[in-house]
Amino acid sequence: MKKYNILISNDDGINGPGLKPLIKELSSFANIYVIVPKHEMSGTSHSIHLKKYLKLEKIKHNIYALVGGTPADCVKYALYSFFKDKIDLVVSGINTCANLAQDVVYSGTVASAREGAYLGIPSISVSASDETNPCYNQVAKAVLKIAKEVLKKEKKGRPALCLNINIPPNYKGIKVVPLGIRCYDETIVEKKTKKGTYYKLAGRFISGKKNKNSDIDAIEQGFISITPLELDQTSFFKIKSYKFLEKK
Image (tube, rainbow, N blue to C red; front, side, top):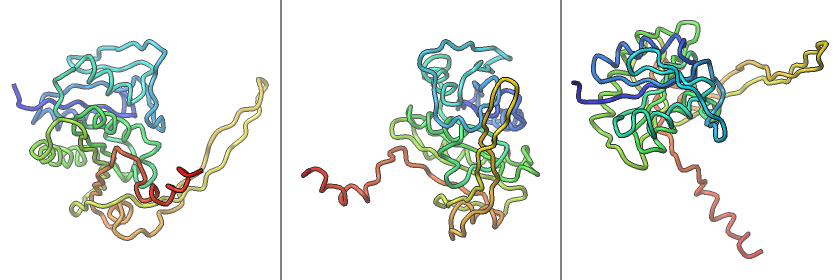
């Protein structure tokens, strides 16, 4: 029996192309447990189901798909019930494209890792930064190296570590950096049918502002970007400047 137990989740679902390479690589080092959404749940952020019963489908030994479940649901189900008190590390991914800058707010992949950290388990979110050349096997090997280091350094308990990691193909090394800012050309597209008018969010990534030494900058230079994320979203900088409201 291996020393460590790793929970894998994602937002690309049970058929996500980054899942099998990640399982294969991490299973060489740890016991692997998997709960992922049955279908793709990209962009669901940290949403969870509070009033709905969900079905858990067994795919094979210790690998399950949560039907209708979000990435955060999957981690909750794993840590509260199905793999309770077993997990030493949560790894979310491998996402099919980068999660940089404010992407971390919308990403289901990042939410999986954030949920693990909320529940006291060191967690990492992993994305292949080049969706035209994701190199999942190479990314998985890099994840294994990073996971080993995290397990050496981090212990279970709140507040736990949450790392957002983006890995380019043929990376040069690792940079531990803050989030940058990404620019998108977003719009709402209208579609008229016999049943009525429907709307969809559409757009494309334009650029990342040239935030020197940011995650965007690191990826553009060919480095793995690692950003530790705070679970406490308080803007301590602004607390003092808004103290005047207490006197109103």
